[in-house]
Image 1 (cartoon, rainbow, N blue to C red):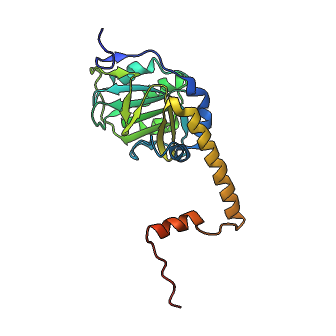
Image 2: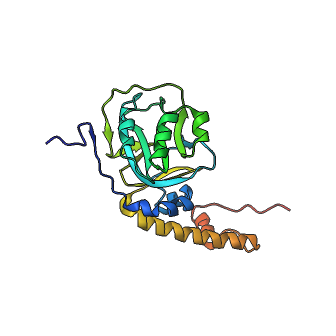
Image 3: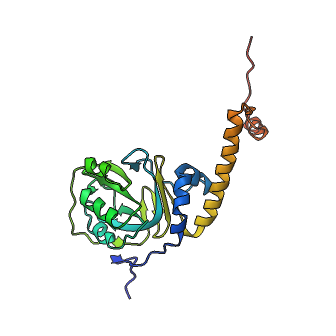
Length: 233
């Protein structure tokens, strides 16, 4: 039997167990989630939201396309369900406008939570009016062909980060971060604890209770040989 990971293929099944955690991840945000999983899983900073203030999270549906071709992206639309985030990757770097108003409208009709494109999008004026949050590498009116074989719902690399079907994709103004399905609950717990610590710190700051660097950071500076130079006055 041919290995579907080697030959072009469409995998129908996505493990969406982490979908119930999506709203919590979206509320916590990309920066907090990134820090809470050891500063891993962050896509390249070139992947940006099309509309400022956008926020989304959900299980990944993935597609891997030939550069300048969106056939596999179109095939992936059939498998997108409510709450999914479609992640569009390419076999080589591409800036083609792979998504426009029609594809975005289909995703909205299917109830998708978001779209991440490691390439270009077009029909930007229309996309900004639509309700689907979109993150992309660039804007380009350059169209695509529909003749290249590829993969749907297999591991892909988008924005320099590995994305597996069912992983939690979290996106906002800070970018896009991917949380592996296997560690989603653990990362969520750490992220919530981090938010609680930061809330307490912000409360102290607002009350004038911040006393400067912590003893731990002062010791770190000392170990690194950083010297304080006193004022001559």
